[in-house]
Image (cartoon, rainbow, N blue to C red; front, side, top):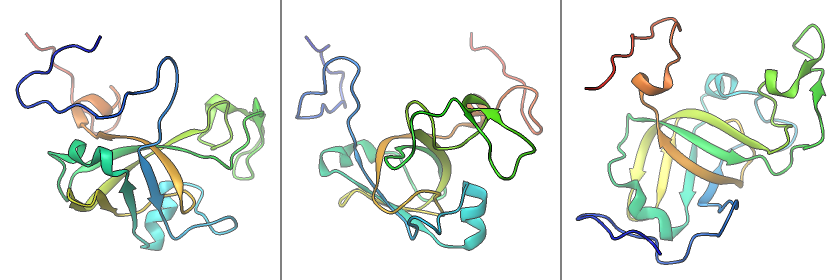
Length: 167
């Protein structure tokens, strides 16, 4: 039984999946395909080629509060990636690494993430314009989270601010 709604809350009309299941909330539209996709978001930004996110209409109300200029984390499903590699030998490294030590899309669960800048937000159509992305056109989108420096910057990282506990 779902909890009662608080004032201002809006519930998804269709029931969420039961148990450990994922639901795609949209698709990423990029200029990339097999053979020309940058291997990371930094390289994608260097090309100057923007991209967009197309949300399933059921999720457009969840965009409330997002605006151009905001950084968000996109979580997406790399559906063409391998899921059987425990160690990999990327060409840019000096030797093999464990899958959990690199950012390759080839992993047990092919969830990838990129922190992107919103350049446009259309809450009516559910389209987000973004500065760049490093995945194929049509990649399924799992989630969007706001990037927050106090939460998402690791301690001891250059430029990180000391975390002050809330009272």
